[in-house]
Length: 69
Ligand SMILES: [Zn+2]
Image (cartoon, rainbow, N blue to C red):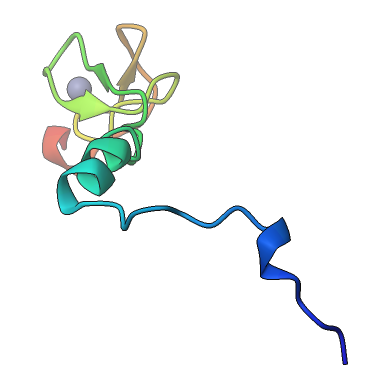
């Protein structure tokens, strides 16, 4: 068995307070992905992709949608 010499390890002097913990974690957040808006209908969509609602990409209709029929 390995004998642990506790004097060799850095041990926290104090317990981290709730506030300090929360302040540290303010930087830990989920990133919001890139969002673009459709120039025709104004719907939010992923960049470099055709609009799901009106089927337009770069002001040209590329997909036939059910609404237009
Ligand atoms: Zn659109």
